[in-house]
Image 1 (tube, one colour):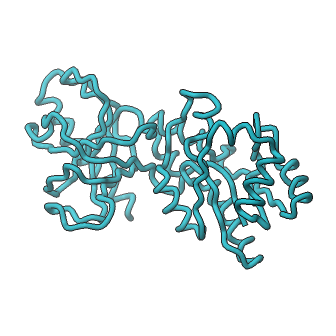
Image 2 (cartoon, one colour):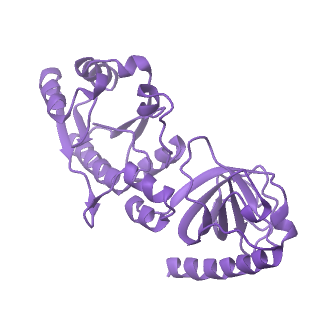
Image 3 (cartoon, rainbow, N blue to C red):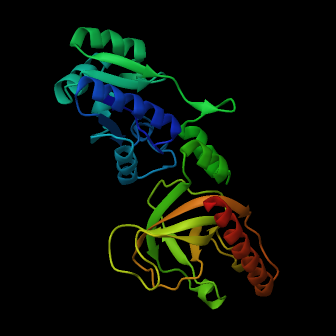
Length: 305
């Protein structure tokens, strides 16, 4: 049993598809295989058009496993793969490589050179090559279809609440903590400067209430334990009060002290508190940061209740 797609974000629509796939796998007594692509197909078909990435490959694999997928397969998306006809894709990839008995896809699924194949074509080829096809309708609420494109637009607008609704969990940005200019420590709010991977979908500039987690196993770092989530006020932007030019993601972890440099961390964005502002002086900035921290506590306490 194989389900195919980019699955960026592994959102609620994807979850419907994966649930159908795992159910079909159990009925047929076969493993549930999810096949995704790297890099994003659009980058190969139209170089320079790689969309903002909602999830890393590793995160996609973790989420797929949580939903019951047995095998997470990453297919390198190359110009050669993009050039295959629908027939060759079905025969060479689905039959010869994956030995698919059942293929589960979304009802907007396309494949093959210039996206020439659709669900009907896949079913036709399945009849020829010996696999069956199940299509799953796109999922949404409030007249909105949940898709990776829709979620990217929410994140880009800073509307992380709507992104959470569509994802089924807060939008996450991962990265390694690197050294910044140290200004936060001087202001009484030491921050972890998170360097995300290329193409990561970063929310619009502003201040957010978020959860902060050190990823992976390891010893306790200061007062921060890996795998545990902590409240954080997160600033995204260029620090206009200090004429900053580089866009950064800086997390102030509440009530904890730790040297986080070099740690691989996750920031889960819960709610946007305000947009990025330029203040007349440092005192005004510090006052605003104090208000941000108070609001962060309130928002995250409500999110847990």
